[in-house]
Amino acid sequence: MANELQNGLQKYRFVCTLTFGDIYGQVIVWLIVIFIGLAASLTLYNNPVQAFLVGGLILVLTLPFLLFAFVTTLVNHIEMRPVTVTEKKKRKDAAVASTTEVATAN
Image (cartoon, rainbow, N blue to C red; front, side, top):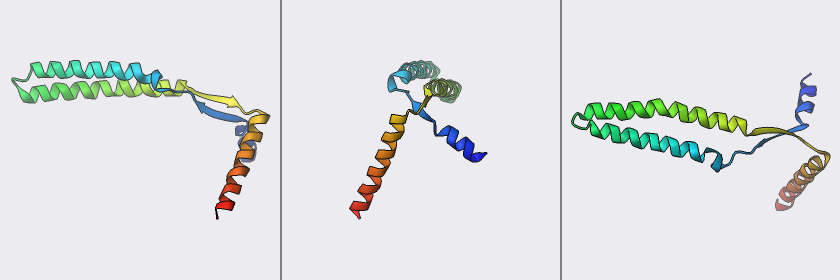
């Protein structure tokens, strides 16, 4: 059974198509929220403890949303593509070439 599962997984290749541009907007929005939060906490600076707590609260409340947005974007950009015969041959040739390079280097 395990061998059947392994053979079935060899027919597919996991590909991550995520680029920096996919998360760039999310990071920019999060930075804007952080800077607005810092500005808000600076207005409360006549009480430094309260200002620190407001800044920390904003960071703690916004970080999970950033992580959730990033993880869901990452998961949406993972694809399973079927491996074609030519890709299998290229992969096999690359493996043979790398083993011969190691053998000749020794």
